[in-house]
Length: 204
Image (cartoon, rainbow, N blue to C red):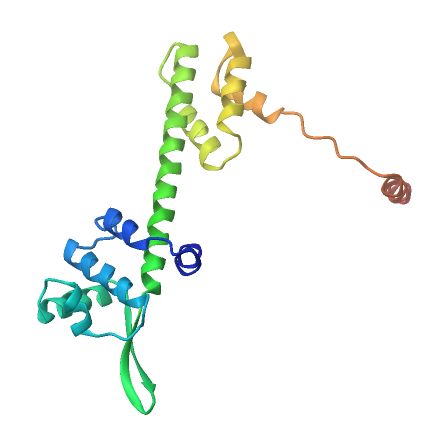
């Protein structure tokens, strides 16, 4: 995970992200306060202790225990037992927090892409309706939507094709212009050309 590596290797402030994004992560302020305190402890050791947490927080041990339980259920932390020097101790891990934050960022990015595509489609529909002087029909709207959803053409290419269509603008005509885009010429070396010639001769 990139975020965890930044935290481990470059002392990246994960706490600032938590305090800024806790609502999007479905955390309460109390939960995020406990989580930040756990990160503070984790920099020194991974032994879980309600006493250590209570020194950093103004909550009672009972309240802290409740918030820790909630963080476990929401998959931000894990608790395990570890045996060391013949004694068992409870340890905690915060890796799931990095997973949750990266998921949040990925979802935010997907939402931004969805909004951009929606805006691009709206812009294209407006251009068509202005050029054609009427509201687009259902099948025309579906064709435009498919260009974007199937990523057949870039928004820039679509806009350019609409401009090229000029007075003849229509959804079908623009699609024809888009499909007629010049494909890059494939260079064939001499050996390949000779092999192809031999194959074609055999097929005759």
